[in-house]
Amino acid sequence: MNDTIAARIRRIRKDMADAAAKSGRPPSAVRLMAVTKTVDEARIREALAAGVDVLGENYVQEARRKIERLGTDVPWHGIGHLQTNKAKQAVKLFTLIHSVDRIGLAEEIDRRAAAAGRVTHILIEVNVTSEASKSGVPLSQALPLVHAVSALKNVSVRGLMTLPPWSDDPEASRPCFAALRRLRDQIRAECLECCVMEELSMGMSQDYRVAIEEGATIVRIGRLIFGERPARG
Ligand SMILES: *Cc1c(COP(=O)(O)O)cnc(C)c1O
Image (cartoon, rainbow, N blue to C red; front, top):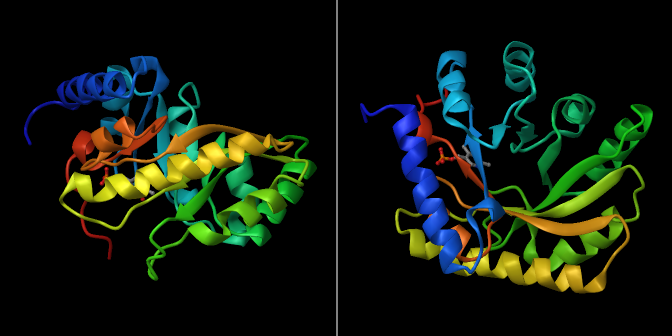
């Protein structure tokens, strides 16, 4: 890919708008997150200049370094598997944590948020297909987890996130996205306190159009904006 980051973002925005229309929603209903893991500062600045809605980082250390340099005019979200001992930093760095998948982590975020005098917004990460290698709460245990988390006063559940099994066929992800939307609607119908079920974080480079057709409100895109990542050693 030797086209510019700005040109890629323009194409993605156009596809996002088409997919949103297919689900009966305006383009503004879906936010574009640029996933910046392993991406250098200069290229992130290009993406910011072209206009993305959110920046997403997997690693707390990397996020801290980048946030110091790039600022927070565009909000930073945490999307990677989070160890409980990183909760304190994650609360400081991220306006939304997408990857809460167990009560112990939610409780630690709650404690750290209370100490910082704030309410931290989170998503519950759901492992819809119960893939053994993945983080995320199994679909069957998602509802009990949401109930437990919604009792915490300094954590606010804003919605759900998922990462389907990798496939080069975007249609393979559709049932997984549809299942997450149904779960969101089911939780929404319960009107829990501290629980605003507005966000569905789903869809990446290869399947974001399908995710939007199924109701995504945030798509998390790395490679399609920045190019292939180097393998992590
Ligand atoms: C890396 C990553 C993405 C972006 O994936 P691409 O295939 O580069 O678009 C999205 N979500 C999560 C949780 C990731 O770790």
